[in-house]
Image (cartoon, rainbow, N blue to C red; front, side, top):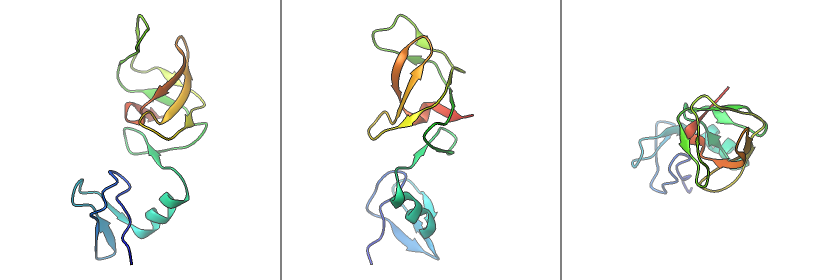
Length: 111
């Protein structure tokens, strides 16, 4: 039986202990049921660990500098109807006053 990679950091050095899978690199623990759910689709988590889905609304949790813009996206800015994409910046959205934008999920929280 091959053990699954860590859903949090992607490490291949996971091991099983008393029904839990454990990652020695990031100390993440999860059950086998969570792994089945992860294989069914991309899992994107916000800054608080809540799962994000297509069409969710989120709030920016810190000021974000934008290349080529005179200002920054301020903390507390609400973003509606997000799309999830693969890559480093895994949220594709439209921010009022800035236009189309890609954000990292670690800088937003689900509303």
